Amino acid sequence: MAEKIQRVKSGIEGFDDIVKGGIPAGDVVLLTGTPGSGKTTFSMQFLAYGARNGEKGVYFTLEESANSIIKQFSVFDPGIVDLIKNGSLKIVEVPLVDFDTFKETLTSEIEGAQAKRVIIDSITYFQMFFPDVISIRKGIIEVATILRTHNTAGILVGEIPYGEEKLSSFGVEEFAADAVVALYLIEKESTFLRAIRVVKMRGTDHLTKFCPMEITDKGIVIYPNAELFAEVH
Image (cartoon, rainbow, N blue to C red; front, side):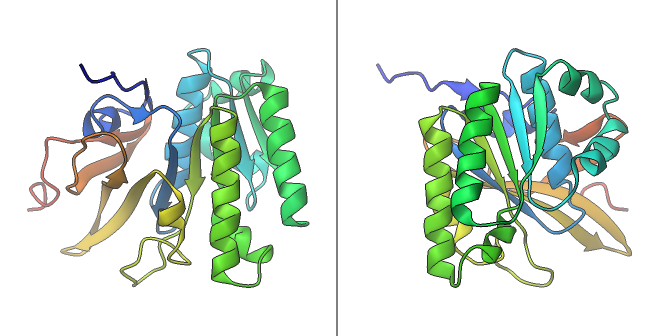
């Protein structure tokens, strides 16, 4: 009898249906998308759900301020402030000094918070630490190893460049992750549709099609059983 896969539930409506019950425990996910596609909202929903269910989380931001992230997400979930106050969730602004300092910060904050869920936003900023793409890939692998060593559910946030077919800024990020989840803003008949696609997820079956997605007043909602263009009239 095959061993049952332990899964981490996202708390995002519709997403766990796409991946047959949740992300396999211990996997590191690359969450990628164009600017404005919903990456921060997805990430914070993932952390907030965990925080409310006994899994502390840390959001490492290399770009935006903690206050900006809290302000953005409070629109969907005003209770996020209480989760931060009670220590269930922490947002850490990472100084772009050097890669060793980043790794030390990552390790100490995960251990200090006893975190089970971790977001790093965004690994596009690794270009500040390294001179070439090969070194960036090695750095991402090192970070993924730290997340796995601490038995966290980790999400690395990346970028899909506008107008390009590739899934990431450097073309190597997806090879260092166990799973790739892509968010899209698709132009169709003078409007934009939101969509999500699980490009890969090791060790589990999953839907591979583009699934419609909305950002509602409660956050992200995904419709796994709907067709992307069916609602466009």
